[in-house]
Image 1 (cartoon, rainbow, N blue to C red):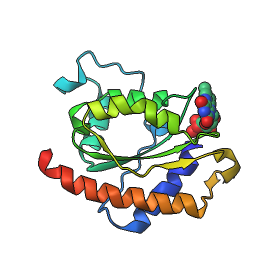
Image 2: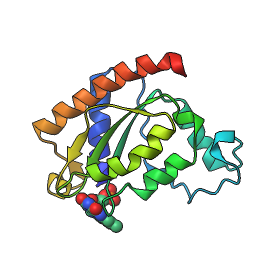
Image 3: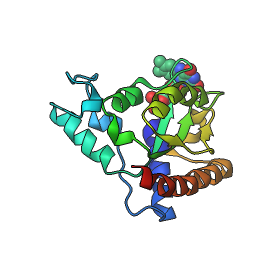
Amino acid sequence: MGLAVAEWVRSRAEADGRFEEIDFADLAEINLPFMDEPNHPSKRQYTKPHTIAWSERVDAADAFIFVTPEYNHSFSPALKNAFDYLNQEWWRKAVGFVSYGGVAGGSRGVTAFEPAFTTLGLVKTGANVEIPFVSAMVADGVFTPTEKETAILQKVIAELEELSGALKPLR
Ligand SMILES: Cc1cc2nc3c(=O)[nH]c(=O)nc-3n(C[C@H](O)[C@H](O)[C@H](O)COP(=O)(O)O)c2cc1C
């Protein structure tokens, strides 16, 4: 489901035009192994090409939108693994979430992830896009949102611009 929802987020972010460049990072395509660096990420002494490439990509960003499901009422292990690879690259940057799932719309996954992303200095938007019963909204790999999801995503994007501007002097 993630790719269908993320393609929608990408198209809205590009259409919005508030950000100069949108980098679309598909964790399935990037295919990071289970975290395999010998040093603590805070040292930034990376040894593997996949870590160096991921570090450069995250470092270049001012703000993030994480598109994520919840698994067993908690965060997505793929997202947590990609997150744990790095440290300083996340510091004092803005993040918004688009979560999806069953009745809870993935919101428990975002809540469970919060101690990790706040520890590494990410600052979350107040608005969250939560998509319940996502499978009913995806057909042939295309996600069709309601007006509610589109309106909230717009708020997330606007907040990201505000927060990323405010956080820039702190980095
Ligand atoms: C191991 C596993 C655990 C899941 N746990 C939850 C859950 O706790 N809450 C929920 O709403 N959906 C849950 N789901 C359903 C997922 O939201 C749904 O499968 C979704 O399509 C997963 O996203 P993905 O297709 O991008 O992997 C779970 C799915 C899997 C595979």
